[in-house]
Length: 469
Image (tube, rainbow, N blue to C red; front, side, top):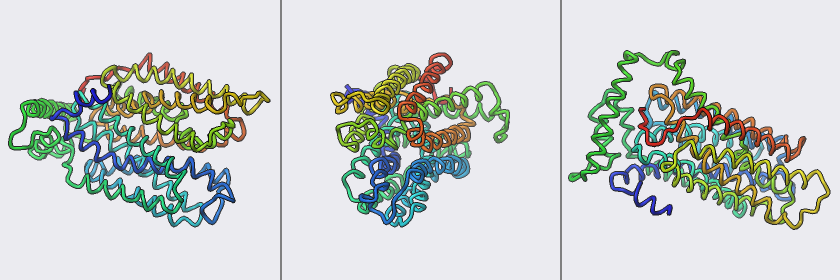
């Protein structure tokens, strides 16, 4: 079913170039995902005197900083790359993502103190923060509206594939070998993106109409000597729509730069509030903290399977959930996926909380269930989160923000995402330590219910709407 969807959609001739470009730019997302997945199996080793591959041991408070400082780097990356994108364009920002991502692996290899791990994770945050701002906007601008949701969801797919690879590599490959393997990815990324044209929308904003036409022809796959009629029609329609939208924007703003009125009108406020609430759900439904501390979570519920094996299973489930999202997002819409996802996350975290309560706080014999029930509940929770609140959030944010403020407002929303992620990842191990895993899970349930209410009552469907509408 999934591959039938591909052959009838994004593999069409007029969309193949957009697919190729998307696959090229998400190589950096794959590399970033490996850096995120690296932490969960590696942190217990770094905290063990007998297993640490380094000359020092990381205690629980230092471990919470190793986990959470990536989010502070995310705030830096959000605003740094939003500035680069606004001043120098999408293309320069895309190249710039490779710099901090390359530094991560040098710092991991040469780490001789916990502070070097902090810096490495901070660089990972800069990459992630910039990536979340740059890539969804770039992909959204070059993609046809009929496949935009699917192409933007490839961003999350690559991230989850990277996390799974990080789980596997960190579980089975020696610490100092990992950087040698992974550092090849940012260099491959630079090679693949070296000849990409600038976004046509950005070129039109700079007044370079002929270059914008050539760039759009490239992305519509009709830049050859004998373009197909379908590609030519897609190009003409997209260029006229893009030019008319930018002319209307210029007419309304009078060629002025951004002002507070652009952010304070009803449409902008609603879009930013929607973005912030979806970011809150994305983080505080618990999935991001779960991924960072998955091995620790399974240790606490005394599962019979080896904790890292459970972690790898969950990483594979993430990919299946993202594939389901790619299939469903342009067929059934964004709103229904978010509603179903919030319901599933509420049920999943509450059920895991109940199991954790009996595992931690009572003398109940759970040996008959410990081999399969914890990983099954967590797998279902992670799956349903990736079908909606994880994958679809990025798609909706790009679509609901007005074009004029999209770069700045998206960086603001993703800055909020990074702050919330820092709070979640910094406090989650401490909550597990002082309040127990059950209470930590039930707090995620409460957030899922609040996001469900907003998605059901206030969120508008954006399926099949132009990115300019």
